[in-house]
Amino acid sequence: MERGKEQGMVVMPQQNPLEQLQAKFKEVDNTFRGWLAKQSLPVEAAVVTTTSAAQGAAIGAFMGTLTNDVSSSLPTPQASLDLLSPKPHRPQSDHSVLFSRR
Figure 1 (cartoon, rainbow, N blue to C red):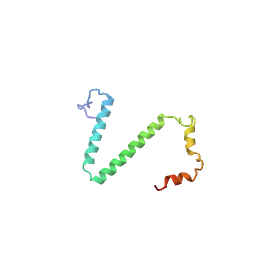
Figure 2 (cartoon, rainbow, N blue to C red):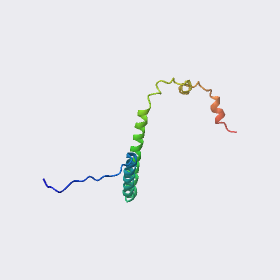
Figure 3 (spheres, rainbow, N blue to C red):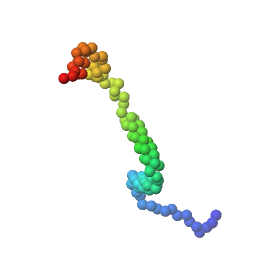
Figure 4 (cartoon, rainbow, N blue to C red):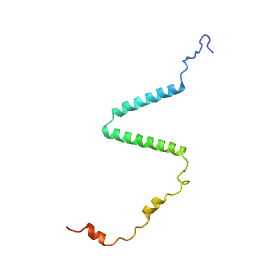
Protein backbone atom coordinates (compact mmCIF):
# COMPACT_ATOMS: atom_id res chain seq x y z
CA MET A 1 0.00 0.00 0.00
CA GLU A 2 1.23 3.42 -0.79
CA ARG A 3 1.31 5.90 1.98
CA GLY A 4 0.86 9.58 1.63
CA LYS A 5 -1.82 9.44 -1.05
CA GLU A 6 -5.31 9.98 0.15
CA GLN A 7 -8.34 9.49 -1.98
CA GLY A 8 -10.71 12.40 -1.69
CA MET A 9 -14.33 12.62 -2.59
CA VAL A 10 -15.69 15.41 -4.67
CA VAL A 11 -18.46 16.99 -2.68
CA MET A 12 -21.19 18.37 -4.87
CA PRO A 13 -23.91 20.54 -3.45
CA GLN A 14 -27.23 18.80 -3.02
CA GLN A 15 -29.48 19.42 -5.97
CA ASN A 16 -33.14 18.61 -6.34
CA PRO A 17 -33.51 15.23 -8.10
CA LEU A 18 -36.28 16.67 -10.29
CA GLU A 19 -33.98 19.46 -11.42
CA GLN A 20 -31.29 16.91 -12.23
CA LEU A 21 -33.79 14.88 -14.25
CA GLN A 22 -35.00 17.97 -16.10
CA ALA A 23 -31.42 19.03 -16.88
CA LYS A 24 -30.57 15.56 -18.22
CA PHE A 25 -33.76 15.46 -20.30
CA LYS A 26 -33.00 18.90 -21.73
CA GLU A 27 -29.46 17.79 -22.60
CA VAL A 28 -30.72 14.65 -24.38
CA ASP A 29 -33.42 16.66 -26.17
CA ASN A 30 -30.93 19.25 -27.41
CA THR A 31 -28.54 16.54 -28.59
CA PHE A 32 -31.36 14.74 -30.43
CA ARG A 33 -32.64 17.94 -32.05
CA GLY A 34 -29.11 18.84 -33.16
CA TRP A 35 -28.64 15.43 -34.74
CA LEU A 36 -32.08 15.58 -36.37
CA ALA A 37 -31.36 18.99 -37.90
CA LYS A 38 -28.34 17.52 -39.71
CA GLN A 39 -30.39 14.75 -41.37
CA SER A 40 -32.00 14.81 -44.80
CA LEU A 41 -35.72 15.51 -45.12
CA PRO A 42 -36.82 11.85 -45.67
CA VAL A 43 -34.80 10.69 -42.65
CA GLU A 44 -36.18 13.53 -40.54
CA ALA A 45 -39.75 12.67 -41.57
CA ALA A 46 -39.25 8.99 -40.77
CA VAL A 47 -37.69 9.70 -37.38
CA VAL A 48 -40.36 12.23 -36.40
CA THR A 49 -43.12 9.82 -37.48
CA THR A 50 -41.58 6.98 -35.50
CA THR A 51 -41.05 9.03 -32.36
CA SER A 52 -44.59 10.44 -32.58
CA ALA A 53 -46.02 6.93 -32.93
CA ALA A 54 -43.97 5.73 -29.95
CA GLN A 55 -45.10 8.72 -27.91
CA GLY A 56 -48.74 8.09 -28.82
CA ALA A 57 -48.44 4.42 -27.91
CA ALA A 58 -46.84 5.26 -24.57
CA ILE A 59 -49.51 7.83 -23.73
CA GLY A 60 -52.27 5.41 -24.79
CA ALA A 61 -50.81 2.63 -22.67
CA PHE A 62 -50.51 4.96 -19.70
CA MET A 63 -54.08 6.22 -20.09
CA GLY A 64 -55.29 2.64 -20.46
CA THR A 65 -53.82 1.73 -17.10
CA LEU A 66 -55.60 4.64 -15.43
CA THR A 67 -59.08 3.73 -16.59
CA ASN A 68 -61.10 0.64 -15.90
CA ASP A 69 -63.35 -0.98 -18.46
CA VAL A 70 -66.23 1.42 -17.88
CA SER A 71 -67.95 0.73 -21.18
CA SER A 72 -69.09 -2.73 -20.09
CA SER A 73 -70.84 -1.32 -17.02
CA LEU A 74 -72.82 1.30 -18.95
CA PRO A 75 -76.17 0.37 -20.52
CA THR A 76 -76.37 0.44 -24.30
CA PRO A 77 -78.38 3.47 -25.45
CA GLN A 78 -81.47 2.62 -27.49
CA ALA A 79 -80.89 5.41 -30.02
CA SER A 80 -77.85 3.65 -31.44
CA LEU A 81 -79.83 0.42 -31.88
CA ASP A 82 -82.53 2.28 -33.81
CA LEU A 83 -79.95 3.40 -36.34
CA LEU A 84 -78.98 -0.21 -37.03
CA SER A 85 -82.51 -1.55 -37.44
CA PRO A 86 -83.85 -1.97 -40.99
CA LYS A 87 -86.02 0.83 -42.32
CA PRO A 88 -89.54 0.18 -43.61
CA HIS A 89 -89.94 -0.15 -47.36
CA ARG A 90 -90.54 3.17 -49.04
CA PRO A 91 -92.95 3.36 -51.94
CA GLN A 92 -91.69 3.84 -55.46
CA SER A 93 -93.27 7.28 -55.57
CA ASP A 94 -90.32 8.71 -53.62
CA HIS A 95 -88.07 7.68 -56.49
CA SER A 96 -90.30 9.43 -59.00
CA VAL A 97 -90.35 12.61 -56.91
CA LEU A 98 -86.59 12.71 -56.64
CA PHE A 99 -85.87 12.08 -60.29
CA SER A 100 -88.80 13.75 -62.00
CA ARG A 101 -88.14 16.30 -64.69
CA ARG A 102 -89.87 19.63 -64.56
